[in-house]
Length: 398
Image (tube, rainbow, N blue to C red; front, side, top):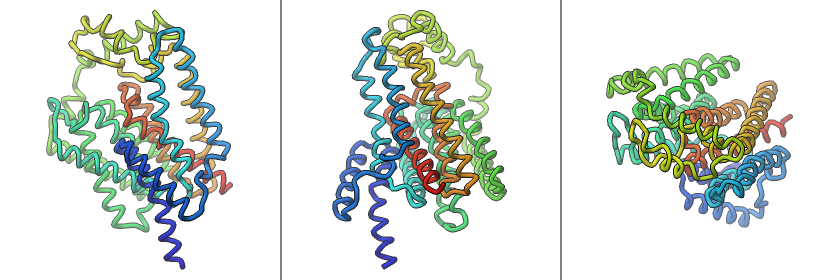
């Protein structure tokens, strides 16, 4: 009977695993398959289609703040000729959050399945890089549009991979060993992209990770994380010794971001309240700033800063909506982490792992704009859905 129950529970978790992987590799087809399989499993087992999170207060509050974010942007469109279709595309990319609420049945197994899904996603990304080992100058980009895109995807998923290693190191030796190797290679690839933004984001999130682990009095995990990082740097220095020094020694004035941000600040002065319109940044840049760019960069779609981008396109109205969402998320995460720690909840340390992925998105967005890409948004909303799962579990145990 116990074996049958485990088998039944495993079947119920398959749609959720597919959902996590679909976000990690940005596959809409796999996302649909996950939903269809969930419907079939619910019908077969005569269980509810809706997950318990849907009816929770924290999910309803989250939807309100997300509506404020998108609503503020929507308010500006009649006044700045914004592209409402583009805004709806951003909204559509939040579907993973709704699917997490529908499919997930939050418990310890849910967090473990999410860890598996993130590891499989990292493996898929690494295999795609092996299949298409494309370098842009001295920077690895693989099949992705730029080295920064590849680096951003990896740096956002690394915290979850690391926390899974910490959480299961005592009871799943071979799984943890494989996960450690996969995480090590992922960090190596991230370093090979030459993305200084990713280096900074990884460094800050890693320091936060160390602090949380130290507070949890887990010295073994500290050693594991230190070893993984040191080995990653050694490997990169061995196979591509010039990457780190070239990128870190580069003069900031040579960076095209400086001109782009200056252009963005000029647009803030000219259109501070309602902005230039959703989806219009690239067009305005081409018409007014592209010709004078000292780095001769063409077809740029953003000032390489998500906060400045939102400020430019939707003015202070849209930026306040975005900052309201961020403040809500950080306050909720901090309260949940503190509560989980005091109760020694099963949600701890997962609340930190998924939370750091959200923080990594916001840190990476200080010098890049991949937040608006389909792939990054899918991962972002998946991670926020998992954060809500940790809050739900902690509240349930309270």
